[in-house]
Figure (tube, rainbow, N blue to C red):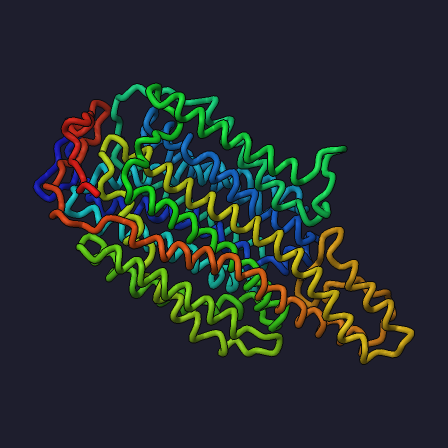
Length: 563
């Protein structure tokens, strides 16, 4: 039998487990999982050139991972309750690491998409276990700081992906953005086997198979429609079935899922709706979805802009965004300390405001002839703001959640984050395709005036057809398919046309995620401020198969402040 020591560290079979060491193991695995949501972005031009992928295929390479990851998170959280979070965490590491090797060996876009799906399965098995274990092994007085570290890792992984990816792609090739996961996965697996407590709660849970099927089908239909819409001209996709019909069907299935949750509210639904009775949890779920929407929605066009418009290498593009990552890392610990105090929500509000403002400055500054130094002030402000986002957001969301619902809450908020990411990437990707087709055609008509009359029509037609059949926007691409033997002056003008047209399209497209981020910042003050002192420190749940938390009863769960 294990008992906690005076410092709050659980003791297992005569060996004391330092909760901060366990947190390091959790964050190591979690960092690797989240890194793959953005590290692939920096390799987009190389994937296009090496695998011959079109833009819509690139979007599937990005979104297949995020989509599978998102729809399986809640199910994986339930499986962790049944079989123990340590087992699910280690299984997720094994699946993800093996899938990373398969991704590195892929020889076609279709193979890469399939192996990215496998990565998503591994990531989904791992992620929900992190917050559940943190909530269990840390007493309440230290939980905010632990959540701050966890949230800082989430933010750092997301913004550090382009820098690390740029170094790997430039020095070793795009396949190494997947090979790099192997040593990290092996190290995390070995440390988890030794240091993670084997938490078992012996609660009987029934997996809501119908709810799982409904949410998976609904999200797949919606995201498939958004990703494939432009390439099918928003028309038929399977016989008489059109893209709008696919999206509408997905929305209908999700509506049925919500109804099913309400109908099963007394029989352990997939998502316990009573979680949303906590106003802080509800508001923070909206904010985290918007943050993920904005982050993924902005990084895809910005990555293409840095490499295809400014002509930067993958490493140079990564180093351009590195100061933002550094600012986030420097200020995240301060945000973690503030998040436990009464000013946590205002720290989050300030962070959201600075992040949105900084990214807006980046987009407004970006021009076809800009220098990357022109973007630096906006990136620094955005990084400072992002440092004050993740830690307070997670702490505010989980502050008043009953310990017995911590696992479910972890699954929900991680799912919400990833749903925001997949919808953001898909929506912005579809909007970018539409805006790029329009902007290129308009810019081609303007620039064609400098060409001889006999060449103008072919030049404008090449760009007018650029948006159909999957547009190529890799390094050195012009977006148009010019015939062999085209004069160098015409090719150069075509490249200039692409740079100008893409910049115009990017500005119009990124207005959507920036608006979403602005609305999310305005929603932060709706959260309740902390009016009561932190709860009396909980005793960590013993890391044994017979562990049963004393706070599992609603009657003994600490009550949060009322609205």
